[in-house]
Image 1 (spheres, chains in turn green, cyan):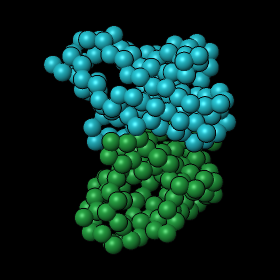
Image 2 (cartoon, rainbow over the protein chains, first blue to last red):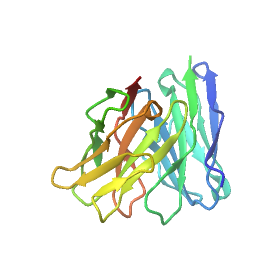
Image 3 (cartoon, one colour):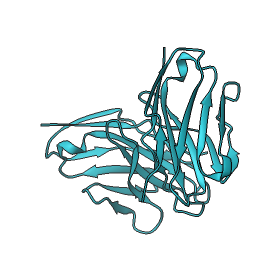
Image 4 (cartoon, rainbow over the protein chains, first blue to last red):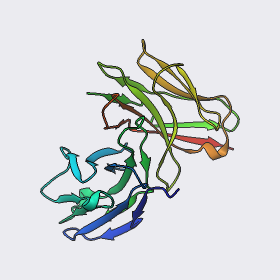
Length: 114
Length: 113
């Protein structure tokens, strides 16, 4: 069974440029998460989807961040414009709707903003 | 709300020595507890979890953790570490029925040959 797939793995951009990250969750997993992991820190939730609906986006900086999950499968996280402080690893995870709480993570997308 | 504290940001240990990575949580309700491992340049992988039942849980690669409700702890232990155990370890907590997982800041375990 394929795991959570994320792309790109690495992205280097200059500040004020836009960037987008893509995530394909495990087949059949209804819940999809985007986390941000700053250097030396644990992951912090940005947004959680159940199917197509964003059920928790309270930590998403909505002035510059946006996300979508069309058709309840793949998801895209966008930053526009990027700032220096956005440099981090962006992790996507998925889980079944009625599971034991385990999240399955992708390898992450490392963003460097210059 | 739940929170997790990992007091040790870095733990160096010699190969074949025992190790304990500490995790304390804060919650006013019952919780599920997890340890995730992150190898260099990889995503997080579940190491072990406590949901209910026996307070001692084990992983397939020799790690174990014990849920201690009175001390609100879920420390991770291994009696003899290998070089391949070098990684970042994250403790996490969630409330049963909720979907959000709250992570600690992580402990970097470095196994020295």
